[in-house]
Length: 345
Image (cartoon, rainbow, N blue to C red; front, side, top):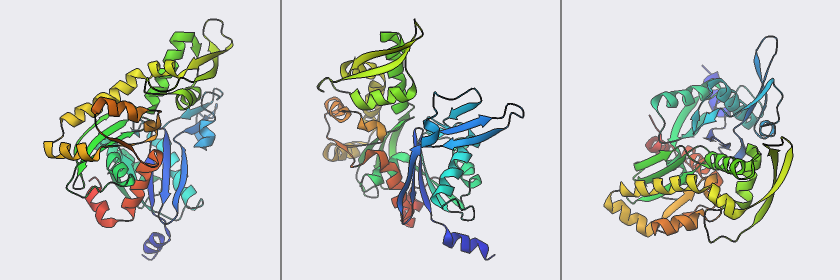
């Protein structure tokens, strides 16, 4: 009877942005304590076929595309939701224990951000994974809502705020008013789809195969969404699909923009469709207040300029798009009345 309240007293509550590409963890009173890739390296015993976790986060990501036959680098979160329950639980346990200096005694309350398109089955999977990993209580908050709070928008006011959250697996577009999401659309297209588009483009254009990490580096270095961006070049290395030997080519920002056209157009179309479904009074607010961009994918060069041209609306990018969702979740954690208003059942 005494141990429960004592554990609650000792625990530091956590806010977790459980993303397809990266997981960010905020601890109440400490700020952000962890920002690592959502990757787990698993080794399979050849004799017993039993799997064990080798590494999580940065260490596991370094292994992507470089593992021997008995080791797999797995992303347990796919398109914003749990695809591998056991591996996701192992990853959450690692982050929770890391937040509490490897202690297994504390059981924190946890706020976890989820996509607005999440099903009841997927909600249950997230909750059960967190509880099995050591959480005392789990609250789910929709990512656009957390992102809006993290970007400094007043979500409780009777005015329209439009948020575009471009993550690794999904892009969530939502109009928020009075602590609720009035209208939203979510597509399974984000940073990962951009990486895949670059891989496929290099394969078609240069008959060369590159890996995920190389593709991500190309996107961050010379990737652009606008024709007005100054042309830059980059040397890339991969495997020649004809000769089968290593190969080096030089690509340009113009080529990468062409490669990214399809996923970028999907995001622009989603913004348009959400605007079409927005009530007129809230649409008038958006004309005045603009659209807020958050998420790692929104950092693509000149994506804000392209959206401004396409929508004819002011486009704002949050101060730190990468951490906006996690920062918003941590703000919710500190405000119990707001947590009750915005958390999902």
